[in-house]
Image (cartoon, rainbow, N blue to C red; front, top):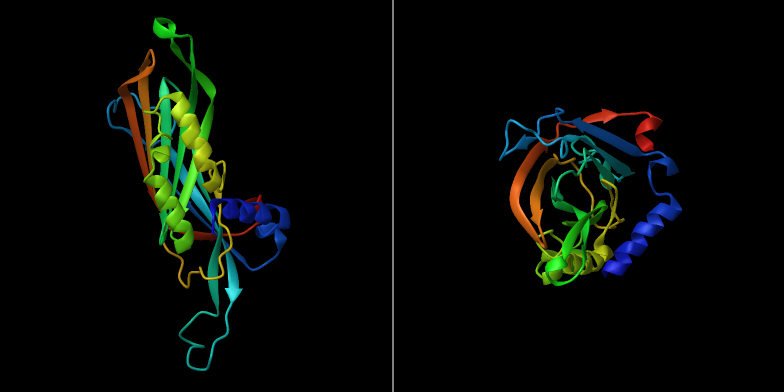
Length: 249
């Protein structure tokens, strides 16, 4: 399945309304992370206000499965199919060059999102300057659902285009890398919407782990200068079931 097909599946989800509002048979889980527990590894006394994990919400579709006399008591009568995962996080970006990386592991699914503050180059020669913008660019990738999709993602990650998505690359190369990565995006903000797969399901809901890395660099001319702040946070899910329409928005 190509990256373009993934986009078409993503659009089909949005258009056909296969989210929770489309019908019953869903399980909504939630987990929390203590506020303000992110750590600046370089400046422990002056914490950066952004990059704080607050929790996560997972929406699953419950699909009934037939059971025989031998499995009626030992196996549940349904399996779980992931619909969407929302990472609740403070996405503020302040300072010089800033980049937030979010890595989520929901076995066997592995999700990564790279959020980079945009910048442009103005002038030529000694007059060249890097101008930081208020906007940001994002890419998201995930593996673990289908081998054919994974092959495309892994090939992209081994290419120079993936490396250029990080802010160590100059803005022109970064823009091209992000453009190439757009075919794999499946996020809406910090919500990841999973394309349907007839072969992927869980019998037991796995735990979620999330780790973040927020890096702030000084900028000098065209080059990203030394790292000023390196903020990290980590979440490990202890799921609880929640109900109510407010979680379906």
